[in-house]
Length: 215
Image 1 (cartoon, one colour):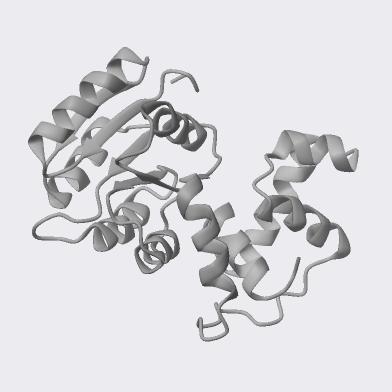
Image 2: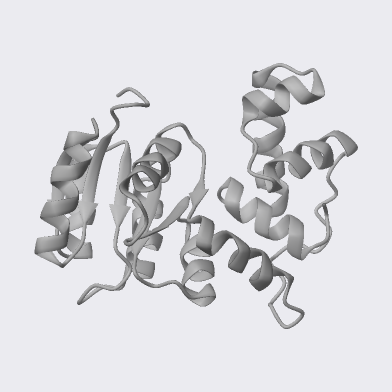
């Protein structure tokens, strides 16, 4: 796998859309190693094909996309799931992120943004549709939004510094440069932050940070 040519499984029950998307992704250098129209098929494919990224629709017959994310992250926790959907509401976004998705893109976005979402996931980063990003902030700042687990995570001052950058979507290399640390040290700090915040990825950490007024 290379960051520019990650191996991807595409999961969407709309065959015409899926085939069109697969064709365009291949033109952009993305290696599509499997397709599925149902979530349960995707679970089998992931274990058989070992993809770098899973591109998953939310609204499918049978098992829902949210349940599929839970199952996929349970059986393959190191395989990032990027949601691709028409559902542009805050509740769907939050449900997907809290289930374990590392990215959320809309089907009507420019294809370059969808491709970048896949490549970001392959790099271990996260990307949310620009249209949804502001809604995410609104949602997690809402006073009636339920607090996530762990009200007192007891982060060190350095971890809080790193979390501030993570919440702004800045990658480890840039954080390392800004704080005059090695990338390895930053990676260790991020791992500790995720553990203390009881979250699975950087997006969930950002949600927790803003909602808990940690940044």
